[in-house]
Image (cartoon, rainbow, N blue to C red; front, side, top):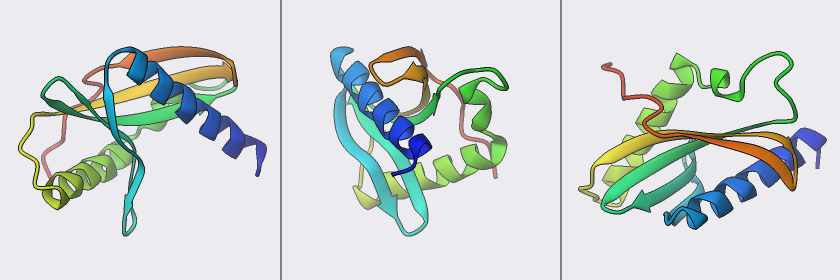
Length: 121
């Protein structure tokens, strides 16, 4: 496995552990349907939370959350809509970003709640 893939996997593991420590219930990890993907789907109380995870070894060039572009947001919203319809859910929805910077076991974690709102298409 390439180094960046290992870093991303470790970041996702750390993000899940962080969310569980905060009282979130993880519904799915790496949920796929066709070409759509969601990193983490969780619940917090009666709210459905879609979490995009961005892991970087450093921030020398950009902040991890800057990788969540308008195009990425559009794909996430479409994936979330597909998820909600697939499971016939009627819960309020929130989109979060968790950024992890560092090395496995030594990540600095930031949780951006309500990181973005669905754009109008």
